[in-house]
Length: 197
Length: 197
Image 1 (cartoon, each protein chain N blue to C red):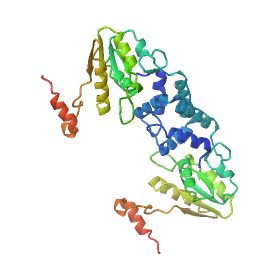
Image 2: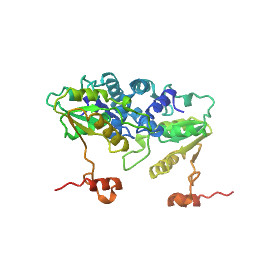
Image 3: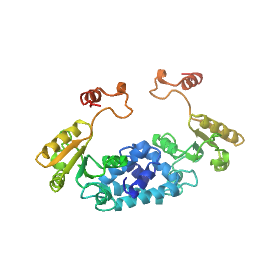
């Protein structure tokens, strides 16, 4: 029975992936308890991001500059393309610092269940980029799920006629992983894909 | 390695009670994926709440009007005061519709551990309201924790010299509660406080 403006805000916040109605209410009350130090800066930051952040037309990353800072970075290798599902995965790889090439955000994965076919993903622009790049190397960094593997297979088929090398992230036991706690599928695959020392 | 504006927003969102860095990042990406339908309305709703919602000087509720809609409601009983810890608890009681009197938000509970003494809580204004009201009835709706019980005891002591009746929410087995799954303290207390049928 809060004011309609409050109920409206709580309803909108409750739509966010990590929040429900109860935690949205707690969040709003916490913000109202610290208007100057938390609420006002948060609203200002959201306003800025809403206005300034754009999708990079080259790779699909989100940034305040166009093309994005990764695409504009002249120190990065131009002939390597890392294909990711979404921007969160791009940022995750950037945090590791392991990759110094270009990205390509697909915007999803092929999924018959969700009705997502090749036309719903950014595939055409990937093929064009690969076609225009010499000694091109494509690295698939897609999730180790059925949809991720289907998409990797589909795209490597599409790339078969291009003069580029294609690879994918290795699958296996994660660092610190106890074999006893690992799911059977991962253990089986890590066994089959064992490497010589 | 997102843009500084994005990292700033994620850091601010991650301070909310229900969110951490990872879920804040997911929330921001989800919002950026639906700028027109979700992000812009959310920013507008936050702006409105930030500007319009004030703490009611009479009871401590949060509302867009001053005094709040509960205090202004002429159909509500004037001589009953329900003492709650915070606004979330006030809203919870309002949702049940069981209470049709006035509220008083303490703004916390007495806690030696957290250094919260009587001076940190809205106690003086409660005493003044009780003093100014005939046939006054005070209902303590504080949590069934050590701090909640301490606060209830302290306040009922302070109210001992006022001509008002004092009560507190009953404690016992919650509706639908299986005895086997209940903690020992609740079961013990429900047993001792058994009522004649």
